[in-house]
Image (cartoon, rainbow, N blue to C red; front, side):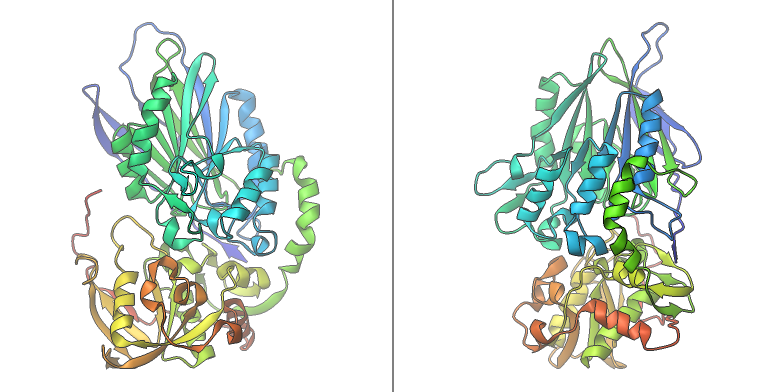
Length: 531
């Protein structure tokens, strides 16, 4: 049984625009508005273009024990909204093909079928769109009834945009034109499997190339559909002059402003639907104001009947995942925002069982591999719970490493903390304790490391258990592990899912708790960064 508490962010940002100071306040409980123009005594009613937003949606079925999310619910919401706002575009800000339990079998095909039924208009790539490689992504794109947009993803062989995606699109509503383009984070090259023939260009370089073309095509209003970190979205807003950014990636409800563009991000798995109304002058084609609302997607909403056949098709797999495998006596923290930034009880537990299963001195798990993005309540743990926590099914290998390499790995793991990022590289560990100061320069943040109570010796050899993704593929940038001697090779190694499931099943109930093995010593200091 999974539940999640979605935080509400209220952000007040002041900007100078047309010699006026505009206050931007965001709340899920209120309908919000921001003005982009001075009041006019007489003017035509503006044309309203509604953007509906989801991002980071890995399952078409409801999550959190059926209480939140569900693409079928979102689909019916969209239809209801279109009755009173017919100029509506439904947008997905990246990450849907992977990872999930279902995608391990169907490689994201089930998600494309769901989006086709839902009436999705446009999507940009997230980093996880490339998890199965570029050829599988192209297969999913061919199956899509909607358009994919990514102005900075290039096929190195042809020099053209990947899979011939359009550089941008123009949509016209009641005489006004809106331009849209997509942007993907460059970290995809490190965190996924785009292959050697795919390049991802700098977001600002791509945007400054595309935006003038959109204006030249007659659109005064420009929407960037992005999958970036918030700090990168802010940079994009400042360098490009776009009017609004529909973003994703963090799995956290975020609303901010940079340049003159508001930035919106929902959490994940369609737990809410963002509604952004663009009010555009009919005479000038320029944006006059923006209204927005965050709509919780809960079990009080009905499913779109069009999804009955899809539910029937994938029902047997979904039902098989409800098989009990064990119990937990305590709440398990597998929220993305936590496992990527701090010690959590489930991060400790997973690293512990990796180390114990392989007999290694140290266990290391990159936080981005822990995926459920929820709080699992005390009670029965099902096969779905286990597979949602570790859906990739990587093998767990054992390596020999010097203390110096282990120290370098820890430095890499904490290098981007404090930069408005939730880095997948963040190291959850076992058999080792470390402290770091995020106000120091990257590469010099680790302040202490001990292994079994003794200071880490840079010259000594240690054994470390981690996944093939980290050890052999340099996943999340852990290239310091390349070419390390392997004591347990992939062909002999157990899978991460099997290790976790056996550990849960081996006791009447698990009850992991944090023990202070990871400490951030700068908490309480001024942690502000320029962004």
